[in-house]
Length: 278
Length: 185
Image (cartoon, rainbow over all chains, first blue to last red; front, top):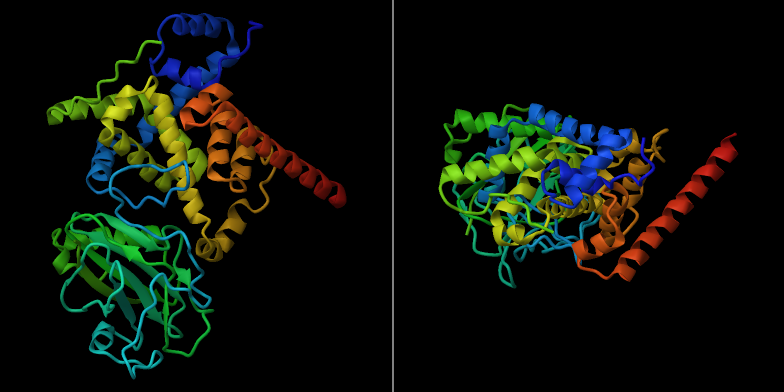
């Protein structure tokens, strides 16, 4: 039994990790020898590490960290004073997000060519994007500054310039849910809309059936190599984790060749676009 | 205070790098993963976040090496990273589309609401990021004001103000909860 103040959490963790030397180390050893509460906390820290090692093997840990070093995941934009000045972000979403189910303020506004009607526009891209059924998607590309926008090609990889962003539009009315993810040429899958959970419900979006609505925000691909965007419109919500697994499985079936990626083994209509990153 | 002898930073052979990773894994993996799990409440996201934190350690070796306590540095990075993840998830469109999930998961908080660590986590979403970080380091890591000020690069009075505002918020939350319980009874 001891009447000394208990050792603080961080000090206990540093002690456990072997970071402390004299005079802290012997002082904590002496305290812990007499204090059941601090001994228990040290055991909890030890147990936490043991559970961690049981859950995540070293090989898995090392592979994950090495992958994160090679291709950093999208890091949410940091706020004042808390910036993580890390490697180049793989993805970047502007913070000014808006709901997809309301009229959108576009990060970049998809523009129409003169005489083109937003509701019933029919371009070759849109025709080709209809793998089945009558719905489709539109992937708009905007340059970093001012300049003409364009629609991403369907049948060939679209080469992006630095700073170019994409925005995903879908036709409303035919399907209730949308899910978008991407996979790079290393097989890494990145959920985009949403990042976790289940498909976004878009059936409440107001507007004429068949008109195009755009998902909130735009996406910038950074890094090198290719990236395949996959958009799934469905009538039932899909789990993001299941979609990630399906994308991994498709990548394996394609023998790690992104250009031969088959459709994912999931219900709904699927649309794919390939981008070559700047 | 002597600096720890963490061998991560030589940048030599693949074998050296592997040994450095193993050192990080066995000394700090549990603590960092625990922090990410505590804040994110999602195993998959926590693992991703943990990988990002250790990747940052490997890609910022000089900074990491100069730290008196690698653990404290890692916990700061992990905390900031996860708070930013949570912040991004609270963007309006996320809220809209995840409302049902949130309602199902933590809508009322349950009996554990005011257990210290959970209470801190529950209140985090209502503060700015710097206050969030200060609260986590103070209430969860049990660091002193001086230590937090040094860690976050702010003055002690600034950190004190942040924590005072967090305390006021928690008091309001207690009062609101008590009032709600009285009405129910």
